[in-house]
Length: 461
Figure 1 (cartoon, rainbow, N blue to C red):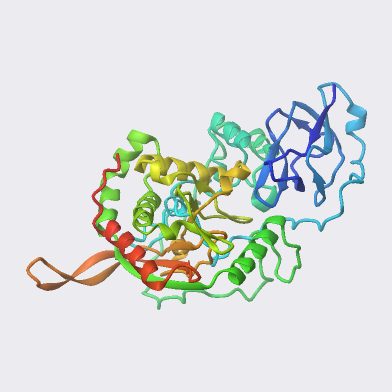
Figure 2: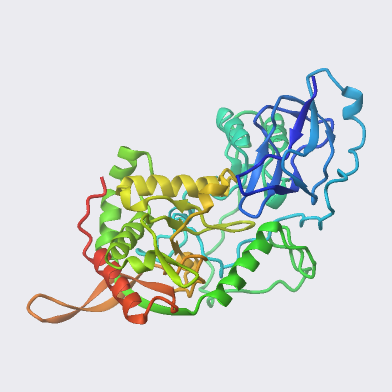
C-alpha cells in the first residue's frame, strides 16, 4: 500500500518548511529511516527520513517550495507496487506551495568570520596551545554523509575519505558508497604503489618558495561547489541569520571588552588526562567544558549577565542555558545546553559533543536551539586572536574564545622576582548590552572567568 510522505512539524511554533533538496528521485529504492529529503525552517535545517521502505513513486512538491506542515510532499510505493507510476515524471509542485527561489546547487563553505563551535577545535585537531599547526584527527571528521552511509562503510571496512561524494556540498550518498563497493569490494581501493624511479643526485638548496603562487595557466577553480561570478539565492537559514544579526545590532547597545588569560594549567591538565578521560567516558576531552564551567561560575557572581530585557524590566533567568555556536557548511546554528549550572564537567562535555554532532548531521530539534540565556562562540578556530561577536537576542551578553598560542610572558614568582617563561595564552572577549550592563560589571564578570580558568582546581572526572 502506498505511503504518503508529509512535511513534518519540527516544533510547536513551526507551521511550514522549505524543501531544499530531494535525496532520492522517482523510481529509486528507499529504505525506512534512510534520509529522503532535506528541509529548512526558521529554526533548524534537517534531513527527513523515509517513513517506509519501497520505491519513491512520486514527488509532489519540488525542491525550493515552501509548504504547510502535514502537506503530502511525495509518495512511496510498497515493494512491487506502482512500478509504472514510479517511472513517470515528477508531478508539478503542490498548488498550496508558493514558489520560492531554487536553492544553490552546493552549500558555500563557512566563512572564517563566522563564529565556530568550540568542540570543533578537537575535531579539526587545532592544537594551537602546543605548536599552532593544523592536524587531521580522522578521515571522516569533516565528510558529509548520512548514518546509513556510515553504517555501510563500517560494515564493509571502507574509509569515507576514499569515496567521492556526488551530493550537496560533496555529501556522500548511499549510491556513492554502493558504487564504490561494487567497484573495489570490501576494504576499498588499495593505494597505488609509487613507480620505481632511478636515484638522482641531491639537488642544491633552493630558495624558499613564496607561501602562495597563483595559477595562471588555467581558469579559477570553484571552491565548495560555488563558481566565482555565480549569483545564488540565500538559503532559508542564511536569511534568518541575516535578519537576526541586523535586528540584534539595532536592538542592543553593543560594547566589547578583551581579556588575555593564561591557559597553561588547563592545557597541561587536558594533555595529561585526555586519554584517561576518553577511556572513562567514551568522549573526547575538549576545551569547551572548561570555558562553560568558568562562565557558569562568573554568572553566579554576576547574574545580570544571564538576563534579558522585557520592556522596561530586566528578567534575571533562574536557569543558565548556554548556547554553543556551531559553524556548519551551510550556515551557523546555536544549540543550547539547558540547565548548565546543574551539570558536572562530564555532563557538559557530553551535552556539548552530542549537540554539536547532531547539528552537523541535521538531527537537532527546534527546542534545542531555543531558550538560551548566554552564548559562547569561538572565533579563534581559524587562528583569530579574538573576535567581537554580536549578541544573540534576546540575550544581553556573549563570550568569544580566541586561539590558544604559546608565547613568551613575564611571570612573577612568590618572592616578587620577574622572569620570562613560555605560557599558553589566549584572548577572551565579551560583547554586552550597555542598556543594562555597565562596563565595570562586564569587566568584573570577565575577571572572574579569567581567574577561574587560570587557577583551575576542579576535578574533571
